[in-house]
Length: 222
Image 1 (cartoon, rainbow, N blue to C red):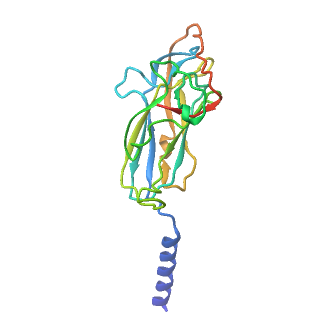
Image 2 (cartoon, helix red, strand yellow):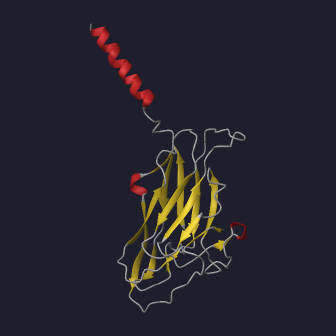
Image 3 (cartoon, rainbow, N blue to C red):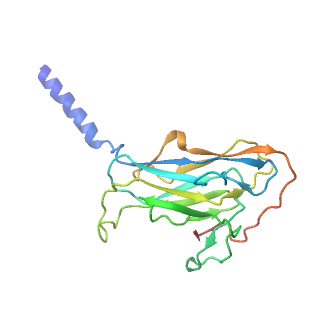
């Protein structure tokens, strides 16, 4: 009788394991940023990253936990104020083209590597809501048309050139990081779902706000 009970218990455990999702077969997403410490509370074009730091920008890291197929997923960064800089647009996407704002340092993606080597541009910018979306790759088609394979790489990229209107906000400021789905084998590390952005150096008169003339949400490229 005891042996029978043990067998039932083992079968139950085996069934649970078989039905449970592969929680370790994923890419873990983390975000890192060196906050800009020289901003002022009335700045309407505040840097979100310290421009003097090495590798300036918001670093997105995807750490391989175990090999697994991936589904295309949207990464969203939500800033605490309206975005006042812009990226260079892509005429093939049907959007009105204007130079990046500011032209010497527009919003763009740099340093893409590994799994994210093909991530070369942000997907959308919603200026008034302060959000930027970036598409993370899926593995469907990697093995040929319609063929899904497992990913075996980690990857990184940096988002640079993001400026926001911080007039009237209270420091320290943070940005939220989220994924469109937790079922695509991308997971967000719990204590890396927000990043530090700015601390006030002093109070000063408000700077004029940059005005991107594109629609509220546009497609852009680096």
